[in-house]
Image (cartoon, rainbow, N blue to C red; front, side):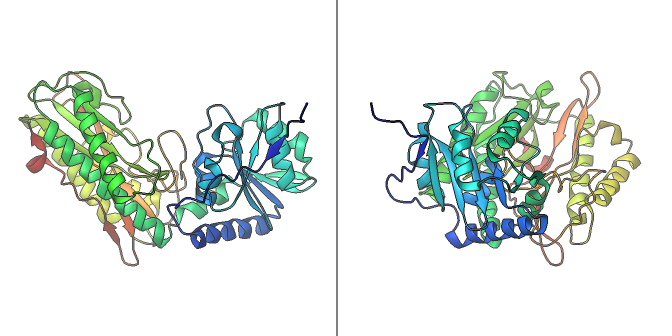
Length: 402
């Protein structure tokens, strides 16, 4: 009987066109190696979807299996499951090893073949499970293990020129979805019908702009009435009624890069109490955007918007922070928590960062103006301020529709 291998290289076909150049990925890995050198790390074993994609170009689909990119002083290798065959190799700029499932822990044998043993190993403390951490210790026998996730997050927070080009395109696609949703809004339409119109428009636009890409994960949250109270409430089959408050949320995904458009709308008419809350949130949105400039700290920006709402007796209706970073992230992977507009984040804004402004107020059911109000624009921090790359209009003049 032929022996079954623990791992092998299945370089099937030619390398695919990736979202960025090989030079861009090499620069990112060089930055990672500088982090490793500073920390004394001999091998980085990165297991999250966002870091594997950021350093290699390959965005994996785990389905219960572990994946990684292993980076040493000389090697950069993705390690993927046999079920994916040659696709991981085609979709990364570097080498790839496929591990088999003929026996348990072949993944870690493949990792060890690149990382080696008896080194200081860097890992992602915010992603690696306790079970996998134990396996890492068993197979790599590290001198010690160091959490490298915070340092990689700080690297990802600073966007390259190529990243900003892709993020700008994503913001344009989000606008396309927004206009498609606006056109689909009418009394009697279901949330799901309106959401599908926005999603379909975005996916077609992404395919037009990026013909060499893989297409996955773009989505819409379109909420109405009570369902607007939370930012992440799923779509339902509720039918729209005249006077409903609506929340439009489009999320195009391009090669792992997330962008967003979020807007408050009303069906047909808006009552005076709702308009007052809506206009106050729009004013906070505009004020907040004016604060996003180099040298401002996330905490200081947050405090100023808090004061703005407090002066209008609205701060108690705020539900979360006022913005966050953009890049390799999604609703189920990735987060650059060091660049969020919250009281506990002291990060100072720098040119090359990309951040949203998205104030939200939620008024409980049964009260005048009940519902969730949210506006969201994406801003690139420049040398002397910011550039707003979101185009879809906000406010009552454009968004009372249907």
